[in-house]
Image (tube, rainbow, N blue to C red):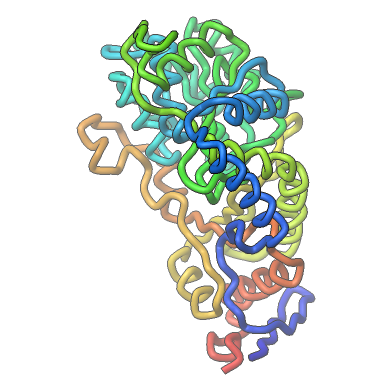
Length: 393
């Protein structure tokens, strides 16, 4: 079936196949074949836990990020959790956490025995700012979690300076910012420690849960390595209470294959984001992502717009075969899990939660797909077409 979309100078005739929010590795036969070959190689050795493959990935990822160390772990949440533990943060301590992050940022603080101090964000960038961090400082604050949300890098250098002055640690939550530039460095190379998730949908995704931490501090790196594997070094010599949070060799093998493609994938994400932004700019009722600040970057793990009638737009796009999602529909402070904190109202985070909408964006998206998304959003907002016409019925 064919569909015609008009609007904003665009007239695109396309097949009415659905446009998914993301596409995983099965969409790239060459990548899939190469990764399966590496998986078979690892399987033939029987070396599934840590070992040479994990060490090779750690070395390559550290080089990519521009840090001295990378420590592979079992998930992004464990990367954050063990980072806070490695920093000595625990009961009685508090960590500044933006309320509009995924809950794992706060969970990791809680898992370390500390308390997240949930704060509001800048409404335009949806990130922490140095002033927000300064206003949140108290004697109990021991760290700040700077989340590079959706792939946009925050004011890491300035926030690092605030943290140093206050005598607290800076933890970069880079779960959505693999490869992003940040004030002349990479995300994960500015704070005391950077924490990454390799969940399959990430810009650099494994074939299951996986994560890593990056740091230039050898003592922090050593504690992270101990904590991820029962505090053991050497065998049966347990130097601290740790856990099982090791990166699997199979995941490391897949990640090594994909790391070689990450720069190209991020470039493509930026190109597609620019195309979407150009097409949607000026559309009443829709706010496109804010421009990237000087010295910053955006690798568009997610392409997020704001719309007052977010839910209506989402329904209409679904009727047109275009997927979307909400990241995230509730501030962490509004979740049942953290209701006991009694966090006061956070106006920017609460407004954002009611308006944000993630549109499809991934390296396999075509220019025609992007134009179809633009035309569909414009048609919905401007009332220029009906769902049945858009679906070619």
